[in-house]
Length: 123
Picture (spheres, helix red, strand yellow):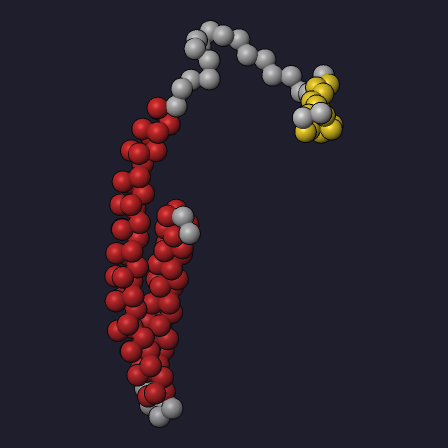
């Protein structure tokens, strides 16, 4: 998976973590308000445990995101250097260029020394 795809996946996981944290907080608050219900004691414990685990998961995701951002940042100068090292297509910016739509047909024909590639260009 490319670094940018990993970064997008990490950002999505961070948003999911934030939503799960909010949801668990709201659910726990609702369970605490209805504390007289004996069946809600198990759910309160579950939500408290979930709220204990989510911040650690978020910290790990943020570390992963920061590492990916750093890796992309480290690659950026290399990409810029490679793109600037490519030769220009034309020597002068003043050279006019016109590209016409054409149809190209190719076929192979048997020849004495093997095969010949025939190319037809139609304007």
